[in-house]
Image (tube, rainbow, N blue to C red; front, side, top):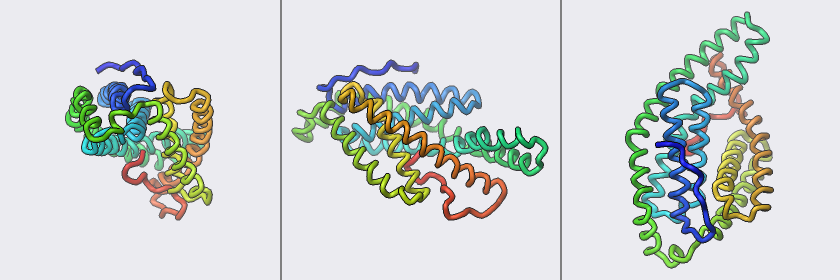
Amino acid sequence: MTDAQPPTLRRKTQPVVAFAALTQASLARIDTSLQDLLHRDEAEDLHQLRVAVRHARAVLWALGPALPRLERERWKRDLRTLARATSEVRDWDVFLAETVAPARKKAPDDPVLAAMADTAATRRNTARAAMLATLVSYRDGQLPVAQRDLAHLAHLAEKVAARSKAGRRDRLGPFARRRVRRGRKRLRALKRAARGGDPGAVHEQRIAGKRLRYTIEALAPVLPPRYARRLHRKLVRQQTRLGDFVDAMVARRLMRECLDVPELPDDVPPPPPGTS
């Protein structure tokens, strides 16, 4: 599979048809990243895979209500598995590149830093071996199923239309606006919950912000342009700020793991099931 061009969306398009077109593009990017990851060890390849998975999960969140429940739940489960498989390796990559490497550059002869670097690299490589096993299983198992799902889009659309009048009359434009409004409402609630600085709440806010950002990017052609651009800029700024905050806490957790020091209450735990 080669990289797909961004699909052309129309406001009158059925949401299930838009889901198939957008997800086909995401699967192309996922497939390309999988091939790269399985043939070389580059942190950027893993980052690109995670971005492609986030896009696919955002599209599923935005347009999933238009899909039959069984298909929606299978997509959700498979993409969640793929996202979770990559989280630990990405955390170690960022820790090694942004915390350990700068520290060793300033103190290249420090034995504690050298030992921590060795421990981090070992744990990262162990995590990568487990990740690759999961990715191979996805490539050979779930990915062909996903591709067959999209190939039978007409059948899925008929099932949706047959189940309710809303399925026949709904169109992508109003559907997308409703989902963005829902995402904003959810993000506001999470922002209020995170005001006290609880790491778990901040993490949830960050994930919801990413999801809404990628939803807007995917559905931009059918959203009001000025509204979408303004909200997207706001989300990017917020994501950068929260990313720095969470990355610092994750780095502290990983440093404690390397040094075998007990966790503190405000350390960020590993991502819970279903996040990335």
